[in-house]
Image 1 (spheres, one colour):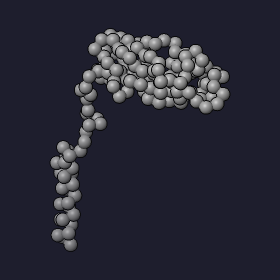
Image 2: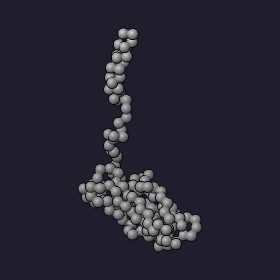
Image 3: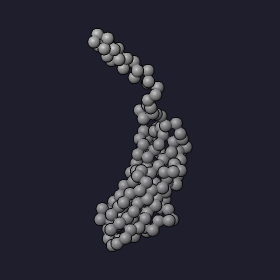
Image 4: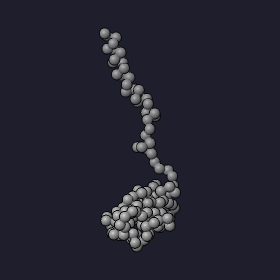
Length: 150
């Protein structure tokens, strides 16, 4: 019985040492990762549903990378493959948005025109076509889709 107690004590004493020795086995990427790629701008979300009864949809343009000490101007354009028509289904208050200095996000409002659709849906595709300074549009995240429904 005495040997059994000594064995349990030894096992309990070894457990913290086992976990301390495995530190490099555990992924710390989620807490210690730093983005090291080029600074880009991107839409979020990439797809959203808007109802004309809502009057408004907001997408975000996000700065991915280090924040800038000066404003970043981002240019947005309606893609030619859109079935939604500007002035009929929606309006964009502006085709440029500004990410303020030392921030990472700006909202892009899309005003939906009430009563413009009675059934079905139309698609609005927006593209980020440029940004100021050395910031570029993310190749994979530069287009957003707004599905406009009644």
